[in-house]
Length: 465
Ligand code: ARG
Image (cartoon, rainbow, N blue to C red; front, side, top):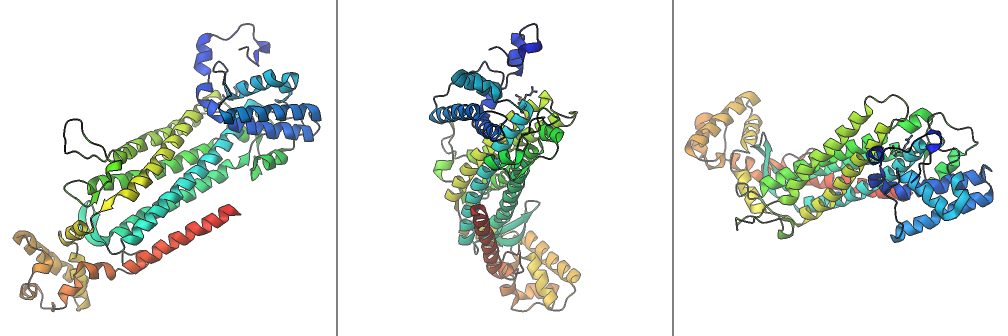
C-alpha cells in the first residue's frame, strides 16, 4: 500500500523496513478505540466549521459502518498497512471517497495514538477493577466462613502464633483492596484527552478539545502538547498496578501450593483446578497456582520493558514509544486471565480445619501467650519470656507440647504458674484475646470483613454516579 506520507520521498520503503516498523499485527487491537476517537474528532470538526457538515457527516457515517463491521467480525484488516491509524484512514477513504482524506485535519498520529491507548487503558482499568472486586467478594465469603478456623501463623516460615484462616485470608483482602485503588488511580491518569496536541506543538485549527473530551467521556484535557504526545505514565501506572497485583496473587499461590503439599496437608484444590502427571499416577498438581506465580515474572518484565523504553527519550514523540503496546497488552491479557482463574480456583479449594488446628497445636504457637500469662501474674516480660523459653526447650527435648506439661513441671521453672494456665494457653484463648482492631480474634476479623464489604458497596455506588 502506498504510504500516506510518501510525498517527500523518492523511493518506496524497503520491504525490510516495512516489516520492521509495522505495528498492525498488535495495534489492530486499538481499532475500536481509534474509530471512536475519529468519530469524536470528525464530529467536532463539523461543529467547529472546520469541515463542512456534509463531509463531517459522511466521515462519521463511514466510521460508524466500520465500527459495526468490526463488531460483526466482517472488517478485514489490511495487514500490509503501516499501523492501525493508517489502515483506518485508508479503509475509510476507500469506503467514502474524498471526504475520508479530510479526517486527519488538525490531528497527528502522535496525539491519535496517545488517545487510542488512553481509551484502551481506561477500559483495561475498569476490567481489572471488576475482576478484583469479584475476587474480593469470594475472599470475604470464605473469610467469613473461617473466622474460627484456627491455624498456625508463620514468620520465617516457622510456626509463630495461632491465627485463623479467616484472618489470614483477610490479609489478602487488604492487598486486593489496595490493588483496586491503584487501578482507579491508573484510570484517573489515563482519563485525560490528548487530541489537539498535534504532532507536538498543538495545531492552528480552532479545535474544541473540551468537546472531544466530552464526546469520548474524558474528565479533562491534557495541558501541554509536548507532554500530551510523549506521556506514557498512565501505562506505567497500569503496568505497575498489574505488577503489584500479580505479586499479591503470586504470594497467595505460593501459600496454596504449600498448603496443598502432603507435608502441610491443609488445603485441597478442586479436581477441576488441578492437573495430573503423564507418568506418576498419584500426582495432583496445583498448576493454576504455579502458572500464576510464573506469569508474575512476565508482567514485571512488561513493566521493566516500558520503563526502559521511556527512560532515554527526548521530547516529544519517538518511534520507540510504539513498543509500549505489546508490553501493555501482554500485561493486561495476563492479568485478566490470572484473576478469574484464581478466583474460581480459590472458591473451589477445600480447607481442612481439623488439619489446620492440629498443626497450630504443634510447634509451640502458644509460647508467647504462656509468657503473657506470667506477665499477668506479675513477672517482667523479659523474665516471663525466659521461663517460657525454658519450658519450650524442655518440651523440645522430650517431644512434648506446652499444654502437656503438668503444673508441677511448670512450677519447677516458675512458682507463678496456677491451674488457670491451661485455659490461658489454649489456641482458642490465644486467638480470642487478640481482639484489637486488625487482630485475629473472630470479632475483630468480622469487623474487618464488614469494613471491606462496606467499602466495596460504597465503591459500587460511586461507580453508579
Ligand atoms: N504506530 C505508531 C505508534 O504506535 C503511531 C504513531 C506514529 N507516529 C509517527 N510519527 N510515526 O507509536
